[in-house]
Every structure is written in structure tokens, then in C-alpha cells.
Length: 244
Image 1 (cartoon, rainbow, N blue to C red):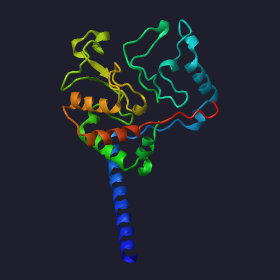
Image 2: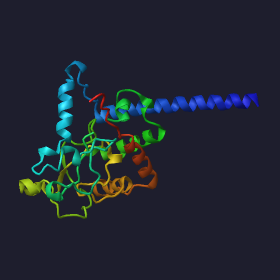
Image 3: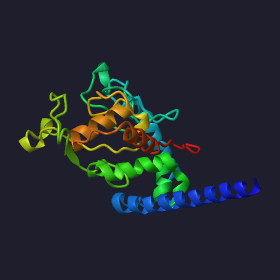
Image 4: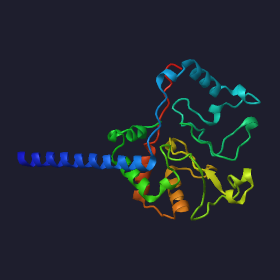
């Protein structure tokens, strides 16, 4: 009995060390692929009065023409908000609906992982990151922000069902800009349903499947979707107000 217990303990320690080693290798791969986070603003450059003023302006609906809409109306950061309004498309003055889904404005514990804390994400999330890096998601969602850096056509391999909104073309009228949209950051993506520029995808699982099919031509397995969603949820964070 004692020998059996020793064997179990040895196996547990060995597996735990293997898991940590694989996470450290994954961290190095993620840093090479996504880059490192920018240096934070040094504390002496953080002016509390200006930050407080910025918060007041962000929440002030008087900045809209009819005093009904603030920045926070579409990019809600109060009460652990997601940085979006969680609507299909945003609503502006006079209750007018816009044509696009609002992007998030928000940190996450994935930051801690990129900064070297391999325990910041668990084994399932690490598996999801491994899949994220290997199947091609990073062809669009690159950099430490996992997106938000350039325009990309939606429907590279297979067309997107909604062809009414022509993306960047609506502004430039250049044919090469047809269906080009700014690649969104995946920060806080677990809290920002519904998804896509038109809010047509109701769940993160559905969005992952659709994007893999349209952009990469890949029909993901349930296993791959499960772990990808686990990883994407590790990108969620919250705002710390600290006396503001």
C-alpha cells in the first residue's frame, strides 16, 4: 500500500512537471507569435485628476446632441461591463440603430501569462491557446491585442451570408475594399456577445465555428471548439477604478 502511494505521488509530480514544461514552451511560442505586451505607463505619469476627468467625460451623455448617449452607452465599463453594449448593433441618438456591432474597449490574466506567469492559465486554456496558434487564427488575430491592427476580408474561403454591409467599401468606394472589416481584438471576447460586425452570431462557440470555416476553410471538431472557447474566455478582464 505504501509503495503504491509513493508511485502515485511520483507520477503526479512527474505529470505536473511535464505540464509546467509544456506551458513554458507554449509561452515562448506565444511570445514569438504574438509579441510581448507594451510597457505600462509609469505611475508618476498617471495624473489622477485627468483620469477622473476622463471618466466623467466618458460617462457624460451631455456630449451627445440630444443629451441621451454617452461613450459608455455603447462601450459599457460599469458594473464589470464588457466594454460593449451586448446588442446586435448599437443604438444612438433618437433611438437610431447603427449598422455595426460595438467593439470592446477593454486587461486579462492572459497578460500575466505573456509576462511569464505560466500558471495564469489552466491546462484546458493552454490547450486552446495551442490550437489557436496552430490552426491559423493568428493570421488575423495577431499581436498582443489578438487583433485590432488591420483590415481583412470576411469570407476569405467561403462567403459570409450577409452581403448587404460591404465593409470598408462603404467609405472608400474602392472595389478592393469590398467586405474588408477591421479585425477586432479578442480581448474580453467571452463577454461581448453577439458577434461579428452585424451581431449575427449569438454565441462564442458559433462564432468560432463560422470564422474557422469562412476564413480558414476548416471544419473544427467539437474538441477543438471546446478548447478554443476555453482559451478565449481566459482573455476576459475587468476594470479597477481605484478611488476614481
